[in-house]
Amino acid sequence: MDRNLITFLQGRLDDRDAAGPGKVMELSEAVRRFVRPGMSIHHGGFSFPAAAYYEIARQFWGKAPGFTLIGNSGGAYNFALFAFGKLCRKIISGFNGDGYPFPGPNPILARALREGSMIAENWTFLTVTLRLMAGAMGLPFFPTHSLLGSSLEQDNPESFCRMPSPFADGETIGLLRSLNPDISLAHGWAADPEGNTLLGSPWSANHYGSLAAREGTLVTVERIVDSEFIRRHSHLTKIPGYAVKAVCPVTMGSHPTGLHAHGIPEFEGYGEDEEFILEARKASKDPEQYRAWVEKWVLGCRDHEDFLALLGQRRVWFLKGRIQNDSWVSELSDYASRLQFPVEATDAERLVHAGSLKIRELVEAKGHRLLLCGIGVSNLASWSAFYDLRSRGNPLQLVAEVGFYGYVPQPADPFVFNLRNVPSSGMITDIFTTLGMMMSGKTPCMGVLGAGQVDRFGNVNTTRLSDEGPHLVGSGGANDVASTATEIVVTLEQSRSRFVENVPYVTSPGDRVTTVVSQFGIFEKAPGRNGLILTAYYPDGSEEESLRAIQEHCGWELKVARPLRILAPPSPDEVKFIRCFDPKRLFLGGTESVRREHGGSR
Image (cartoon, rainbow, N blue to C red; front, side, top):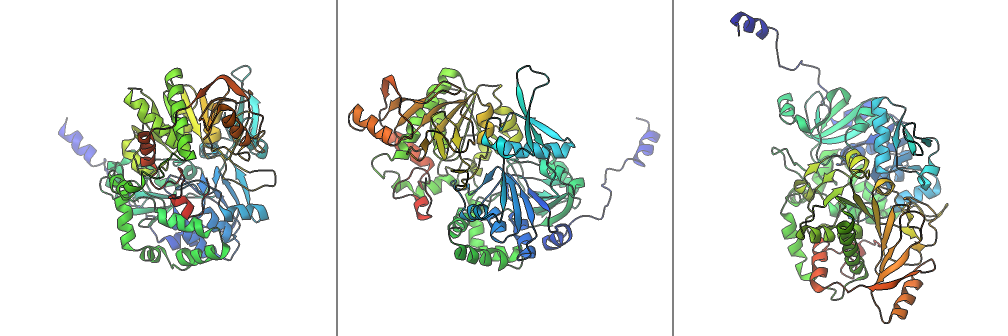
């Protein structure tokens, strides 16, 4: 190239960043400057911006600011905190309850909803995401197949409607009203002073709320870095600087949720703090105990540095070790002696075994390529079937709604979104991709879902027990999967209160449900409004005695297929393999269950 031309360009091409004023500030200052009473506050990403939530609580406690909270989910240490302190008047989410390490209603949220001090808009993981996407794109609405035919459709007439497809005769689609929060909160690994932010994987709700927020995003990060660092990791940059109001350095700012450093070798990750979360959940059962918890961990700390000092370095070290890929080995070793007990399989273990057998059978017969499972026995059954199918050379891929594709579940932790599974994933993505596209039914796919109740048509309820009854937890991603997946299997421990003739609230329609599995056996039906029929059972005495026991635990008149298949009980090795994924027996039950120690019920 001509030397004069090179000199000419060198004088004009400058790859240095323009030196802006920067947005770095203390978290307390950012909250004082940018958070106001009456705001709608969104949180996104997989790692919860807990430090920002706690700082907002400190500054507005006792002032009744009337916030609206927007996010996929929340429980004892976040949504319940704002409900208890009367900081919010409304929550817009897909899951109102405790999810980690096992799902269940949160007493504080349930009480606030019952007393009317707070209202909830119940959505799903995908529909919250799509509403924010529409807001970010400047669209008035976004189309969806979710919610159609469910009680969620009836509950949200101001923000959801159905219409005939203008391009496909006879097809009905749903329309979701766009959603633009006032401000968004996010916690990431790093940001430069202008706010270009690297988020930890998986992406879950991703950056759609940040881009939809009217006044921008308040970002907390583990570290402030220069723009060159951002460029080296630009594939992980999810929030652009123009959408950021403030950048606040906050070490372990997503605690008690974890943060995986997958793809960023310069950082140390940290795992979920199960002890902290279970402490908050236990305190939620009694207002005075929860008040003491709030005083200790939130109001009693002047800032996040005080919080970390109270947490202690020993626990920080433990959480950093917990995120390591092979940490399951030592964790499982601690429980190895308990894997042989109880000697007999529990009801939950029989359920998992029967579910695994049926999932394997359906995958092989129908050629399902993708499988997405819910929390609890549904994912234990799915994981067991996955390993069995894998040994047979079947190409089935596991999907988790927060953004795992092709993951290989590791032992010791049965939580379906276990961050130790991140490095085993063939692809890391977000809710829009997993629920909106992978589980759309274009590729043969199966959903395996848990439930609070199921009826004879396969309709699932995970929202509330009656019009005025107790609140459960909501849909999560279940309605999204049940609305589009090729086939649905439901797993649920059977009782008359759970197997009901008609569910009082249809969280997930049963049209695509073909199988329901319980500790007693397997119920099946053709897709659509057909009734479930018992097709296989675990014998407990004679056939007559077994069927009598099953009927006693069923809220509808039992119908039995002929011939009726007998299920062999799980072998000792099968039971042991299942227990390796849940050594604390959070879902498998028995007297050794950690869940019993914290008052949880299955």
